[in-house]
Image (tube, rainbow, N blue to C red; front, side, top):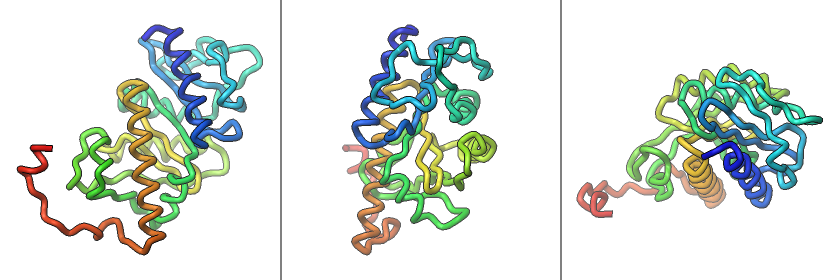
Length: 221
């Protein structure tokens, strides 16, 4: 993907997230790595109105190489860089999905979000239906950049997860490229929506299905 295509892809994803209610009121953010450059959406701009010329260009160490006139670098920058640096992420997405926010409220302090026996888990990278997959949930802070240390710690401490949830706030998700990160975000949002609805229905998502795994059937699927 060249710089122009990467810029257009960020704008496309920003519009998509805005239309889904995941990036309302200038919230959310996106970064994509293209070679030795990281392109990043600016702060304080309505996501559905972002243009390719509005994006920042950063070095791989996080230094700003090129800044668009009149725009501010997002406070998410150091959080994006944690996934780019430690996971070699090709894209990092940040959203304020209501279902994700509600799901974080169901997780006891100090515990991860646990998923098991839900079909869309198979859409997460390296995760199977019968796995118990854990995603870190960190506590929110007053200012976004103050999350940097605890998010970086979560990235390092949970090597099987490609997302970090922020309680009462939203989620950071990454992937090997923009398409992969997008599908991870979509699957995680579905799973969180399912958990919220299960809790409302009085179901425990960790004990709702006690059927035994059938390895032969899973391989056939």
